[in-house]
Image (cartoon, rainbow, N blue to C red; front, side):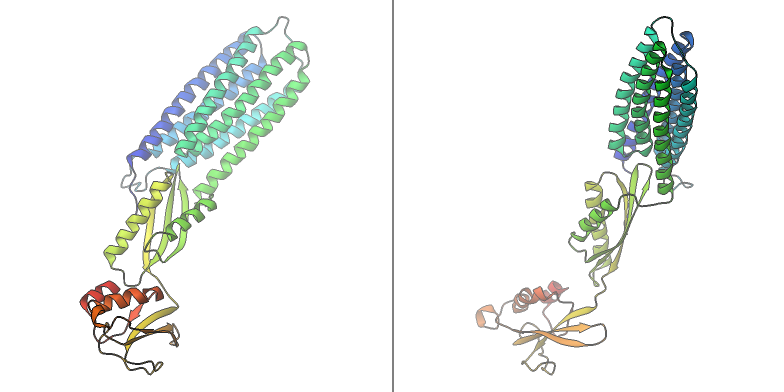
Length: 388
């Protein structure tokens, strides 16, 4: 069995996620401050509400950064598997923040349905701040999304989705300011409620998925099937059984049972596990560890070869030497003790010119039958090791 230790590249990815979370936090925090001050000075309640929403975003992104920071801590005696799941847990908390923001926007939208608002002068500064908010939110969301895909971070993906929705909310706020100036607040309130419901839906999703991940649910069966197929194609693997995949933070862990030849020595089984680990982790960067349990293949039938002196079915007399036998009988034996002749093979290598290493030549000719057992009184050393 084999597991892969945490690599430096994984730590680097987590640290990059932390840096992006800090950049996003700073940008959104500055936006929230600008919105609140502008809304307060120019008596724009909708802009103040949007500032409150951005403040909730800041708390959510800070929680994301904290989760990534915990995930990047080294293993310890108390936490031998690391703290990757901290990122998943924080994603759940982010979902709760998003729902809270959605509810607040529903309440604000409901108020704006029945409380007309108007400005005596054109609200140039609030309009400018809302426009800047749309512009900044777009670039922050894109940065978060690209980084989340790179490091497979659920928390950053949640933040990116929320920030993309902020673009729509900021657009609604901009429209609401203009509509309030025109004395038509009802459309503004209806749109704010609609966006708020979308936020709540996103928050529920960002709670539901982390709950499944914390319960070790497999959310990517397509990848699991692909990995099974990849393992089955590796030389030496007779069968792949019971592949399990779970996600811990931004990385996935694989556990599987593979079957190999029943007489494969322990060191060969260990080499096979190493090779599987290297192939899988190299191809799939999001997989952090591979645990491989190697066991001998179980077969319902065995292919048996015996050197015989003549072709007399199962009553054929066994020849005293493997390579110099005139014939070979190949028998299929099942687990219930039954036997059936599959083939008789005539030894065409008994002529004088072919007598050197005749056993090796016979083996090369009959290996297509996928032999499991050889019954013979005597066999040359080279032939023995070749069959083994």
